Length: 494
Ligand code: SF4
Ligand code: SF4
Image (cartoon, rainbow, N blue to C red; front, side, top):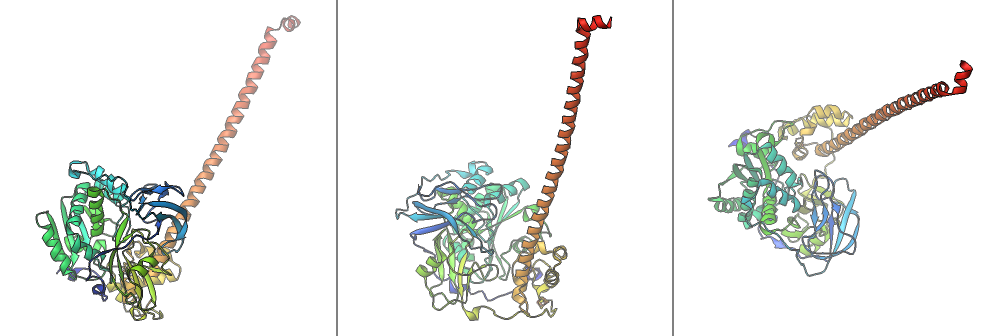
């Protein structure tokens, strides 16, 4: 199998069966929703409502700003109670602006506008609708989908790859969605193909999801979309690994999938696209896995965005025991939560409450140079060397060793016998390099401004001097003319 030739990867216990055996349930609307303006990569959305406004379900609450951004919509009808900072589910832990919406209990929709025959429209119109629906990559990247589609359309895409890998342990939201909404996902895939004019579409599903594989294969019959099993392993769901597995194409370092004519979207994103085009429904809810040893009733729920994670956990399940670690997302790439007072956002694939035996508390010890991290890295990097350079403060050297190609998958940290928090080091270093780059850009911008100011002042001084000289010359000329035309002066001269 191709997997044998695939670089790196690890095989953590998947814990999928904790949550994947029951159907998706609809989570009830809470009285207050906390709709974050930063639910995507890029610039936060700009509020277009005021405190006290009444809004309808699906109404735009905040609009996209700048080139990379996405709007957010009201998950239900109600009244805007506040616009204030709130703790965000983000590694920085910094607060973000959040619109608090008091639900009125009517759940009244705004007038929806489905597109009757989308395949008769130009691709740009589909991209535009996907953008106004606030759809982002729901596999965890949260990159605004319309921006990615527009860039792909410009590049020229041959193949759409639908990512049904879901390789993170515990997560089963995509698995359940594929089992229960196969046709909607495939419809979304066809719409995405139209939006980027892709000729082929392949859906990749890990072979540890036999039910989803069987259902999607049957549903795809006659659609032109091929469904392929890929061997389970971590990080099979990451873009470059899945592309290599399904097409044999290896995306070079520093290159994007689109450069090779390939676009990858998650199955949940395809589902959201179909709902936006066919139902006129913006992204106002998502499927969230609730799991972990501390959770009484693990499973999957469709949760309105803005629901507090604490309310979700308490109403959907409750705890069997005090959790030792709370996570939003999976254990490999998820965000550790200090508590559950954060809202569910577009990227919240899971809320995990793990027990002591499920997490490693080992103290980190010195590197024993076993090179397991090198073998595990799917990007062919040297994690131990990068970490050593970061620790000694040489971020530039770490970068030349390939830090920017690190996808933050966590495979190296998982396998390291010395429990060295390699991925944390890499995330820290990447953040530092971004800050350094921004500081450098700011410095250069200030330097350019100062040079321009100096040049302007010199020019103004020159202009002033020229003006004065011109005035002096004009005055002298006038004086001379006055002397020439004065008869008394002329007589005196005579
Ligand atoms: S796996 Fe850990 S101990 Fe082994 S070489 Fe890598 S960093 Fe060092
Ligand atoms: S986190 Fe980065 S360095 Fe570590 S295995 Fe993944 S890609 Fe490689």
